[in-house]
Length: 68
Image 1: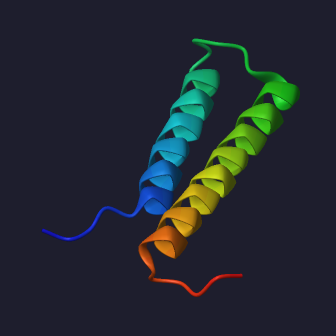
Image 2: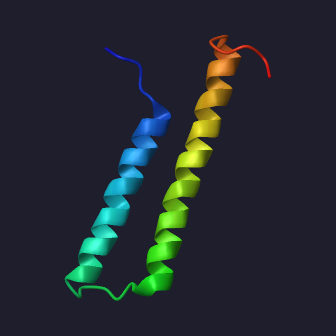
Image 3: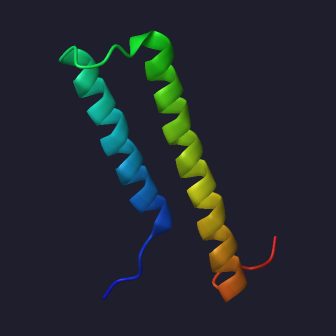
């Protein structure tokens, strides 16, 4: 079984979440507005950046990456 890539997993979940919010806004189920849309996108990007940092730290601790 292939190794789980945390960054890809978080990016996929964030993309699905933002897409769901935008779909619900388009269907007038919720009223997101421009500030809500931008906030959602920035939150998704932040989650991916944090996941990337965690994955890099794990790779460095396991010896896959040289020390910085």
